[in-house]
Length: 225
Image (cartoon, rainbow, N blue to C red):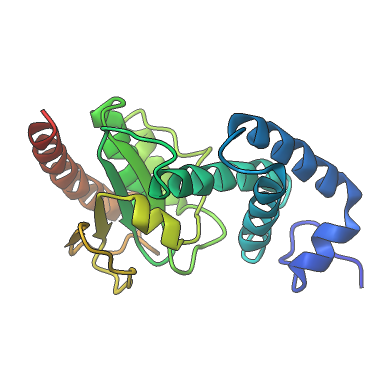
């Protein structure tokens, strides 16, 4: 049966391989990323990561128009984390990973707020153990009120390499489990879930996250001063 655009694909591998246009886009993205990681990862490793990232995102995506580009962004993040874990790259910036089940609300707000306030002083990631197909619209609206645009963000699967690369791993009080590695700082922020809530209910959640993010940033900047 032909896949209908806009509907979830039950066989993502088949969808990818039977769409030559998508494969061409993935190949193009992989070639560009491979040039960035010359001397660190082989082109074959990069291509495998790009295709695996596409497969993971396609498992929940409803709209696939920009999926190859999103897969490339996800793959680049994974490769950057792996390079850091292997000691191939060194950074004195602390790295924070925010995790919630769907990576569609609390973790996205926290990542955007910390990235904004840190202004390049902190590397910020977010992910979810069961990522949704899109970010909560009320969350997008609430962040727009602060001038922060989440329209280019997307829910991402939680990966072991992302946890390994982080200095601080923060779950959002939603029962998500993360791999535990020595030397990491783990926090659990108990926060209301914005899922199914309107903008009036999301604003207080956003503001509480903002308060916690600012306090965390003060700690990180002081520690790394």
